[in-house]
Image (cartoon, rainbow, N blue to C red; front, side, top):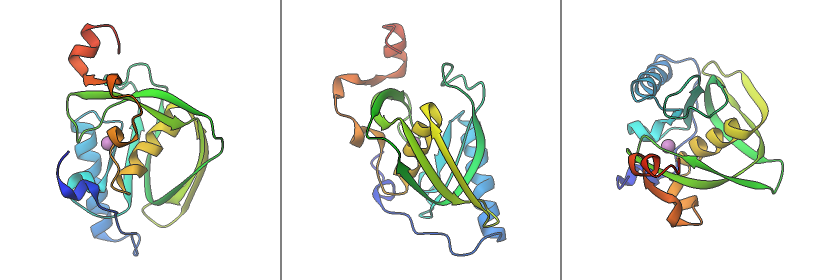
Length: 166
Ligand code: NI
């Protein structure tokens, strides 16, 4: 956080299935897994392209979260299917050691492409919907604290855990 590249809009990918795109996705996967992230967006590794990856499966950073299948999404768009929002704890590999409660749409449809240009379209809710909204926000230059409504719900992971808030 603080790096201006995290505040920029990412450009759409124009060529699918290229060695460059596959190399970027390998970098995203390696970084996400090494840091036990639930997801990662290309701008977080300094690449201003519309590519995100996410996966939640027995993640020690999010022990309460339901599983989310491993997905790479290129040029995604997210459409809320309800006006109803719910608050939930989020972290971000660009803000290490911090968590905040962020309002997100409960149910969304998302549409994008896989690395070979095949359409991916899903209707999701809960933590899956939260992860997609968080990751696609990175492509618009938005970090989760910019979505928070109550900064008293923001803190260091260790302190929040010790206080039984997380
Ligand atoms: Ni993030």
